[in-house]
Image 1 (tube, rainbow, N blue to C red):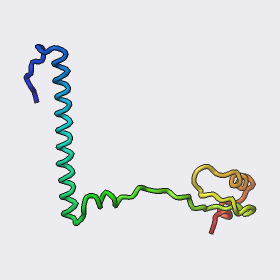
Image 2 (tube, rainbow, N blue to C red):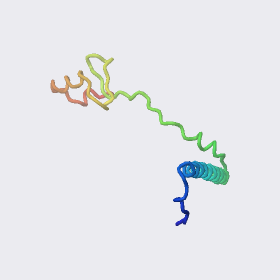
Image 3 (cartoon, rainbow, N blue to C red):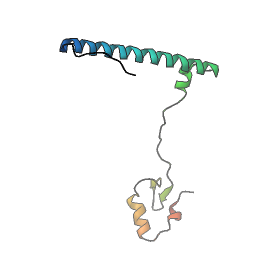
Image 4 (spheres, one colour):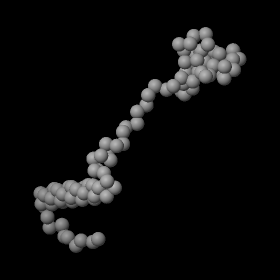
Length: 107
């Protein structure tokens, strides 16, 4: 889209005013487009039997709980490991001593 607007005759203040007016108009266009998009989204949600707000509330944030332990030190049952992340010292020591990993698995 080409516009034949001759800006060469404008001074700095006029150009700055024009820039400010253009930025305001762009913001107005964005607000109108967002309003239209929101109305369209609400309409689609209603066609499916929902309010848009219900759909937005229906997507809970993913929460991570404490990992479930998968391995346990037979010499100290308070020491456990989920199998994720860095191996704890007790687990490495058992592996270095030749212990079979499966014997440490919590059943």
